[in-house]
Amino acid sequence: MSETAIKIEHVSKVYRLYHKPLDRVKESMSFFRKKEFHHKFYALNDISLEIKKGESIGIIGKNGSGKSTLLKIISSVLTQTEGQVFVDGRVSALLELGTGFNPEYTGIENIYANGLIMGYSKAEMDDRLDNIVKFADIGEYIHQPVKTYSSGMFARLAFATAINVDPEILIVDEVLAVGDAKFQIKCINKMEEFKAAGKTVLFVSHTLEQIKRFCTKCAWIDKGNLRVFGDASHIIDEYESEMLREAMEQKALEDKENILSEMEVDANLGKIKAVVCEKKELNTFDDFILDIEYELFDDLKSDALVGVAFYTIDRQYIFGPNTYLDKFEIPSTKGIHRVRYAVPRLPLLGGEYEVDIGLFANRSIVNLDYENNALMIKVKADYFTEGLVHMDHQWEMLQSGEGEKNGK
Image: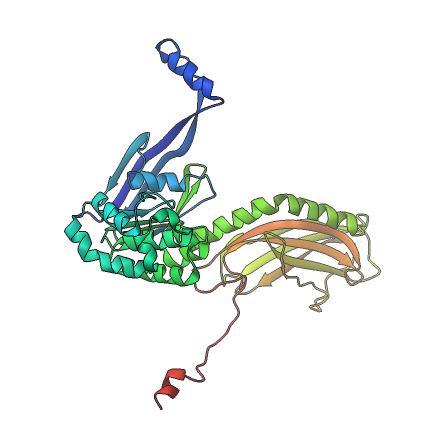
C-alpha cells in the first residue's frame, strides 16, 4: 500500500488577464484566435510536492502567493492548467467561508448536503449528525438559514461538519482565524486527534505559531512558486525574518543615514578595515566568533574601544558589549590591529539578526567609524522555546490544587 497521500507533479495554474473587458471580446473574434489581447498570470508555477500519509503540513506565504489556489486544486474545487495531482483518500476541505454551503439552507440541511457531496448516504449522515451538532455548539441557530450566521458560527459549523465525516485528508484554510480562543483550542485538539490517528492534515494560517506548534513540515509558496519545503520550525523562522526584512528595509536605510549624520565621525583618526565572521549561519548554542580589524592613523590620546551590537531585523536592540565596559584593553597606537569577539553557546533563538560594529575613543564619546549592519547572521533553532534568546531556567511545583481538594 502506498505511503503517499498527495503527490503534485509540475502543477501550474494559469489565468488570462485582460486590461479591459473589450479585449476579451476582441480576442474571441480575432481571425482563428491568433491575436492575443491578454497576458498570462501564473497563480502557481511548476509546483512539485509529495506528502506522506499521517503528515501535518503547513502552507505559508503572503496574500496572493497561491496557497489557496493549491489547496483548491488538491480538493478538486479548481483544475490545474498543467501537471498532475494524485490524491489517495477521501478529502474534507475547509476553504474560504461559504465554500460548499448554501446560504438559504439551514445548518442541518447544509450538514446533509455536504455529506452527500462527500459520498455519504442520508442514513450515514444520521449517525454523524449528533456529533456534528454538538461540536458546532451554535444552539438553535442550527435550524436557521446559514445566511443569518456570524462568521464565527459559520466557522463552527464548517469545521464540525468537515472533521466528523471521517476523511483521510483534512484541509484547513484560515477558517480558525474567525473563531474565538475557546473554539480554536477545541479545533486544534480535534486536529491533534486526527493527526494521532495517522491521517493527513494541510493547514494554512497567518498565525505562524499555530503552524510551528502543530505541523511537522512546511511549504513556503512565494509568488506561485514553491520556495522551500521542509522542517516547519526552521522555515517559519526564515519566513518571518524575510517578512521583517522587507518591511524594515527602508527604515533600516533611514536609520543608517541618521546614525551617520548624528554621530561625530572623525575619519582622520581611524576606521574599521574588515569584519570577518567564522560562520554566518548558526544553530542556537553554536559558538559565535567575529574578527574585527581596525586601523588608527595616529596615536590616540585616549583609549580606543570596539563595540558590537546585536539587533533584530526590525532594529530592536538585543545586546551591545564593548571593550571599555568589559575592561578589555585594545591598542590605541597608530597601525593596523585585530581583535576577536566570541560568544560561546550563542543563546539567540531562530531568526535573522543584524550586527553593528563601531570604533570609538574617549569611552565611546567620539565615534571614529561605525558600520551599521556590518553583517547579518541567520540562526536556526528546533522548536523548544519562544522569544529572542534562551535563558537557563527551571520549574518547580509548589502546590497542586487538585491534591489539596482530595485531602492529599
